[in-house]
Amino acid sequence: MITLALSKGRIFEETMPLLEKAGIVPSEDPEKSRKLIIGTNQPDVRIIIVRATDVPTYVQHGAADLGVAGKDVLIEHSGAGLYQPLDLNIARCRLCVAAAESFDYASAIKQGARLRIATKYVNSAREHFAKRGVHVDLIKLYGSMELAPLVGLADAIVDLVSTGSTLRANKLVEVEEICDISSRLVVNQAALKMKYEQLSPILAVFAEAVGAGTQAPV
Ligand code: ATP
Ligand code: MG
Image (cartoon, rainbow, N blue to C red; front, top):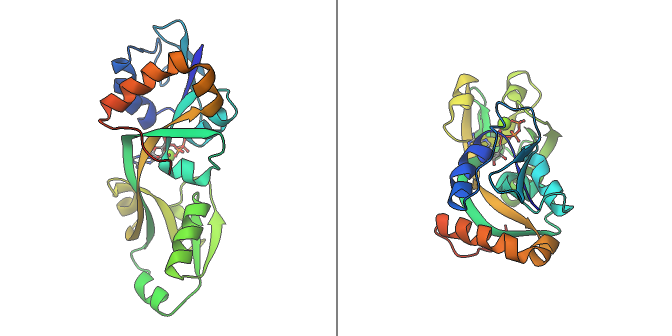
């Protein structure tokens, strides 16, 4: 049995065309079903539905053989036991610093002010501001980061942006780009050896579909 860990929403939707190319079709739509284990047209392949941030954990412990996770999630998670052979180039967005329209971020930085930064991505944020030589107090949040500057919890946030419409709706502006984000295939290293015959055709189809050879880990 091969177990694939996916999160609902954009990652599931954007992984489907790749799976189809490998001849794998889920028997249910996770948006409609409450089931967390979904069978496929192939009796020895199943899909488990987990939170985006939990995908590396399931794969790392071997509860899933492979999964799809955003680079944002992988940077925050320790990569031990995870083989990351492919950038699938799906669920693309970027990691940014954003602040309220009314906050003069540039002059705060110039004056060497200590900034309060709210984010789900504390490791990425810490590294980014350390590189820039900016002193920050990091405030860990689990969602709705856009709210933090509006109610005085933080001066700025580090969050994912794609179209920018959520920022605009909350009168925030992007002030710095940190990095581009896309989703990667992650594979359990032991499973890759033990189940090589079943896994390698799937990996080959994915690699071909995204027009890539194998790539270095993040
Ligand atoms: P939840 O929304 O359930 O709290 P989440 O925010 O971790 O969980 P999603 O919003 O589905 O889950 O995001 C899953 C992944 O999709 C992220 O880890 C990221 O790689 C990518 N992603 C997130 N936001 C965007 C976006 N605006 N545009 C494109 N990709 C995104
Ligand atoms: Mg989300």
